[in-house]
Structure formats: C-alpha cells, structure tokens
Image (cartoon, rainbow, N blue to C red):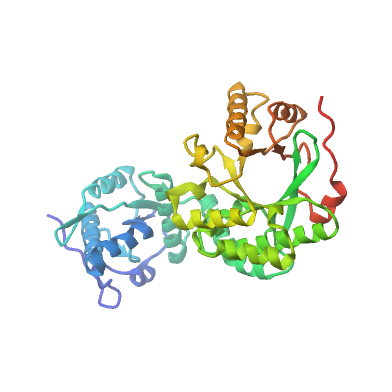
Length: 428
C-alpha cells in the first residue's frame, strides 16, 4: 500500500493541485552529488491556449489536477512532487534517474486525462538536469530547458544541454535587443548583392541584405536573428526599417543616374496585415522611386493557407507595378502544382539546387527543366548561389534570365556597389 504524501502548510501549496509549489521547492532544495531533477511539462503553451479556448478555465484546471494525480500515481510516495508553474511539475531523484522510470511516466500519460468526463490527451515533455552544484533557480531553469529540447526533438526525454541552452539564451537576448537596434543609427545596415542578366553579363538589380552589428555580440548573421523576429511581432518594425532604407537607397542611386532595380526580402507575415501594400506605396512616393524599380521577394510560406488578405495585398502590390519574386523556390511548400498559378512574376531557384548543377546530374536536370517550364508560364527566372564560371555557363546555356552569387559579386556596402558594377567576365 502506498504511503500518503505529506504536504507543507498553506502558502507553499499550489491552490489548484494541492502539491507543494515553487516557493516550497526553493526553500527545501539543496544541491547534492548524483541527484537529478526531472521537469515534466504537461503540454505546450500553444496547445494549452487551445485547450482554454475549447473547454474553458475550470476544465483546464481539471486538466492540471488530473496531470498531477497521474504523475503521483507513477511515483514512489517518498519522492516529493512540486507544481512549479501552470504546466510544469518537478521532482528530485536523490540517486539519479533511471530511464525505466522516465519511460514509465511516458506510458502513464499515453492514456488521456479525464477533465469532467472529457478525455484530454496530454503531450508531455520530460527534462533532466543534474543537481550536483546547481542552485534552485538554475536547476529549475535547466530542467525546463531540457524539457523544451525534449519537445523540440520529439524524444521521450532529454538531458540538459548547456550548448543548446546558451543558444536559446542568446536568441532571447537578441530578440529583446532588436527593438533598440531598429531605433539605433549604427547597428542595422544593408549590403547589396547585384544580380546580372545572364545573356549580356550586365548588372540589372541588387538585392538588399540585412546586417546587424550588435554592440556586444558583434556581427550577427541574418539567418540567426531574422527567424527570431519572424516568430514574433518584431518582424513588422524590422521589415519597415528594411523597406525604408532599401527604398531610400534606390532613390539615392536613381538621383545619381544609376538605373538599378532593388530587390527587398519581405516576410510572408507582413502580407497578413491589411495595408502593407499601401505602406510600400507611401515609401515609394516619399523617396521618388518608380514601383517598376522594386522587386519584393517572399519565401514559399506566402502560399500557405491561401489567406485572402495575403492574396489581396499581393494583387495590390503588383497592380502598382512592383514585381513579386518567389524566393528559395523548391525548398519548402511550393511544388509543380503551384507553379501554374503563382501570385508572382519571378521565380528564384534556391542555391541548394544551383550549387549542385556541376556535380549532380539530377540537380542539373531539375534546374534546366524548371527554367524551361517557368518560361513557358511567363515567369522570369533568377538563379541564386552561382559560385563558378562553369555553373554560370550552364545557366546561361539554359537561358536563365538572371543570376547572383559570389562568382559575380559578394554582398557589398552601397557606397562600393556603384564603383564595382561592371560586366561579368566573358564565359567561354
């Protein structure tokens, strides 16, 4: 027969589950060699929000109580279980954690939790952190980080990994600092990589590429901070900064007689906001730039869900004379069924294909066929990632319209671009 669990006095009990709370854990925790903390999260925050919307707060509290009861059933009563936060529970194993116990907990939660006669599935995640020399604050955060890694990887459980945790912390700091960077005058800047007409070898346009010189971290690559921004509302002011500065640069070049189109990367999330096309038109008018001189590049995510607002904004942008390019074609959602009705003028072949055409006959066949098909459907084609004379020559033979890559030019500062521009060396 199982022993009854002893609970602390009120004030250190969670009012929903009756389990000792985070305050009690912090007061009673002591580092101990060999001991390990296990953190269990009942479900993801997104799924919990959906649960609240579907069944309401009272039933959601039943979900937490049922989760607590299920965990207690799986554990020895001598092990104290703490309700750390709404969705997370923790306990410390004094002599380490056996994988069998973690698998047993997972098995327990394979059965739905009953919330007032409603069966609700729990999508638990288990994280393990060493208690050797960690204080209460750190070990709880480490356990939560491990549980997050468990959820991200889809494994049954995960140990705390300092490297991935440091990356998450850095990402959080970058995201919190991004607002200041947008307002600052010396952190964000644009470089431009020219695109070339493949037939003549002459430059036709330049793609604006965002750079961030962080005061502490130094140069932060866009592949690191742009996805962070895209997952939050930060993407809207960041896109506005890029649009304003790229269009201003296009206006400055035009004033100096440099007739060069400007390509600007825009997040699909920007199109979900009504009025985005009007925002772009206002900036063009402000800096005296002809709409036909601007190309807006979107990734294939713009095609997801066939959002009517997105389609409306795309039509409005194209109606002004702005050209729309579908970036990284072939790497995400789009496929040959989409290509017949893309809301775009240009298809950009992703560099993952282009960089293999000299060594992979299959990649060469795909790129060649895609160029032919796109032309028959009246799309222009741009090849990204051209890094050799051989690749350039193959794409030119296949009548690809434009190309960009380090073979022609790396991204460079706008002041240097006008001086550098010239034809690509003749290709045999």
